[in-house]
Length: 473
Image 1 (cartoon, rainbow, N blue to C red):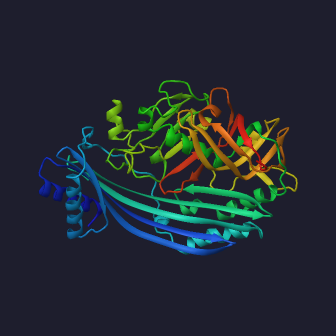
Image 2: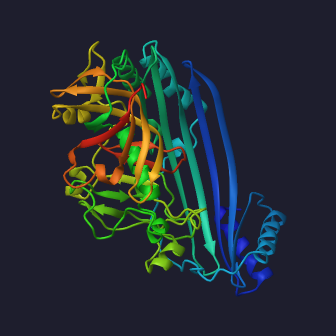
Image 3: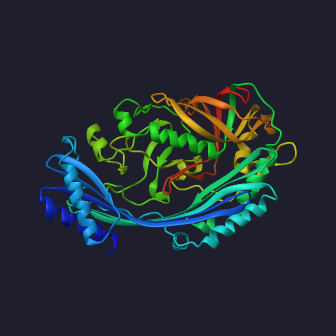
């Protein structure tokens, strides 16, 4: 049976076993995930998994419960319905049940590439080989992955839809003498990932990061590369533009208020790439502008959080949303060119054009980043953030570490590598009015740990970033 046929069969079973008043929604998702991982400059693992998952959410007798299964034969589907009905008798009443998504038109999904969906291990290995060769003898590690998902949704209100999507991603480091350089990209097509360009980029940054000096903690002007900006977007999405947290006053977001620099426009845009055109509740997905020219305009909602806030769902229903809240997973920080035209600004998916050199001749910034660096009298160029944790959710104060390369900028030139810092910074404050001094024109899509989620941004020049500790403490 097709995914839609399976979903329809489960809805019919609920109607037969629980009666016409029971409300059911069913998502059926088939996934094909493949990963080629390398370390010490050779492939050590090639794995793939294929599976189909059925998720049933049921509202009966005023109670709501969800169940999952993977057996698609009639007995397996019947067992799913029966155990979900049994669980419904044990849970408390759910007076806030928002009801089912009514029949609604669903837009076409993102670009779908058959070659990526069914890519072979050899095709992924070829990109790993290109990455390793381009690193010129440096020790390398990382992965190349492809993902394919097809799915269907149906509910007892008569709404149904289908979709499919494919994605490719590569993430690798090169290392020399304890210094690491990183390059990572996410794309709709595996053919768009240039392993050689990524390997060359990672190796150049690693060589340029060797023998770093230590600088004292303090506030520095910074240029953040897209990998670091991706961490900003992820934390803003999870803890700020989350409709449940906003309703609980645990979010910094204040709708209709200028909270960001006028250069900041943030859009959650799942149909831009690699996402199904509907959410787990069957709500059609679309681009949602969260920040428009500095003004916070929206937060993400599923049906439950939207009903509680007196708003409609924005297509962000997902497992766990009733507990943690609905989260945007495809956030784009639009460059000025895209905002002006209403379209997309082209983004390279290789390594970019090297520009700006540190002692030893290693390239530390692509042309887009180098243009921002050239305007800095004294500051820091930061490649990446990691191990970031929330200290104050209301102001979204985050602490974390730099990694994969930091350089001192003097008179517009990266002059020397710097040892890693710990930082403590309010992300909304850092992007606040007057604090964004420059925005690159070439956004780069960064992969998330979960396929279907990604963060796309150009490099940023910020007036201040609070580094609270150096390598010595």
